Amino acid sequence: MTLWWAIAALCAGCYALKLAGLAAPRRVLEHPVVSRFAELVPVALLAALIAVQVFTEEGALRFDPARTAGLGAAVVALLLRAPFLVTLAAAAVVTALVRYFLG
Amino acid sequence: MGVAVGLSGVAFGAAAITAGLSVPQACVLSLLTFTGASQFALTGAVGAGGDLVAATLGALLLGGRNTLYGLRLADLLRVRGPRRLLAAHGVIDESTAVTLAQPTPEAARTGFTTTFASLYLTWNLTTLAGAYGASALGDPGVFGLDVVGPAAFLAILWPRLAASAELRRLAVAGAAVALCATPFLPSGVPVLLAAGAVLVVMVR
Image (cartoon, rainbow over the protein chains, first blue to last red):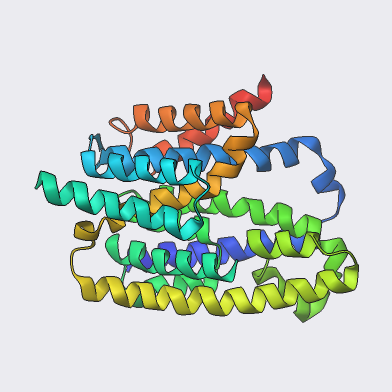
């Protein structure tokens, strides 16, 4: 039930954020602090999410060779300008293979 | 673009099930949140056994960029009343990119409507497919599906990292802050703390 509340809050909040943009006065966008903050925040958040999901487990740092190799495969795919799907598939396949062979 | 969105829909459905969400929960998120990065952020934090309040706040912060998109689109779309309430739901990365790329306001409005409608349909159908697929597969870790979320984040982030050394430093700092804070704070909070790295960059 608690998870449903988090989902409900996220649904309502995300919609409110979208609507706020369409309904807000223009000068808000033109404020340099607002636009810079909006440009930077996703970068820091996404990088943090990647790090936490790959290198931590249950609130502790943990090096998982399979996930690390999968992320490495994604980096290689992106460097080779692979399409989105190929990048995700490469990450998943490499993770699965390393996990299989390391037991 | 429809193909890319469809595939990330499958990936989201699978990631949600991996994280322990039910199929209805994954589908409600896609139907009513309809902004991929926030959805991945919530399910990722839930999967890590994170604090739900921190997880929701982190996902909301990511959703904040849609507000900026809305500000840019408002002048082009010029929607009022009930149509604005409907259009708001469609303000996401992809629809904004298509709309802003159109040469005339009429083309922009058409572009927005068609992108919103087709992506909404694709995103929700593929979420359902991914969620059912992952449920049927059993342990998703065996198939490496737990790395699909981070790989998707990296793919979203990549063009910005490639474009700017400042953003690369910010990304490294954000990741480092989150990892250093992980042993000491409830799961989900370290990611929020990483947003604090932004303030350092802005003050500088």
